[in-house]
Length: 247
Image (cartoon, rainbow, N blue to C red; front, side, top):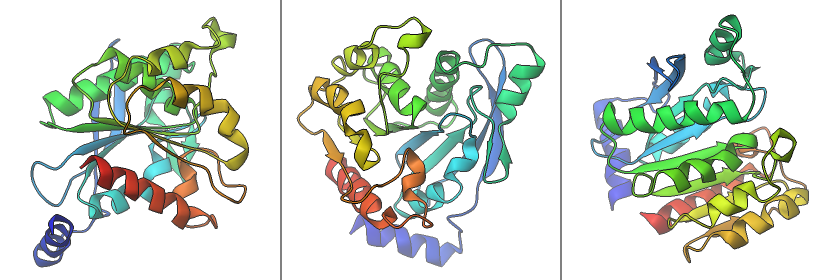
């Protein structure tokens, strides 16, 4: 019933799920973060914070976020300082960081992700927050969730792994954080990547966790949901099933 109401609300008011507003807010070190905010069709809807993969930008979600808003969610897609460009959308946070001579490594993006969570709760008045990561950021969402108990309602991770040993972290850095979170978790990836995230998934203690592995080769990161890829419908079915389960 709620889903039907949302769709009727959009139709009656003439709202477009593709509408978004580009905004800025400061990271923990005062670097300005650029983000696209996609409002939900009804007030009080859960907010999904969308983090992109390596070398990319908030443009990773230009096709995905409008579909999530049609499902009744608000979305905030941010540019982390570790990234560049995708779908014609330049990563403005990365450009500012480069200009300021700041480190743009993967782990430096944690402060941007934390600041996005803080902004969502304080300035967007989001009472329910879901965090969603792609590739390197899909691993770091477990760090953010572990450090913010009670502030995050669920995690979606597209192709997570223990990517950070070469940066001085242990080879179970992400699994250690996953073991601390007590919220629903969804993990997916390309078919061949399961061994990268299986230890992370096993470490999650919450019984509501779900995973999806495609029968075909699939895709790395959130781009698996782009319509250009043949398995996108399968991925979307799995994502929707998880979101429905936790509502």
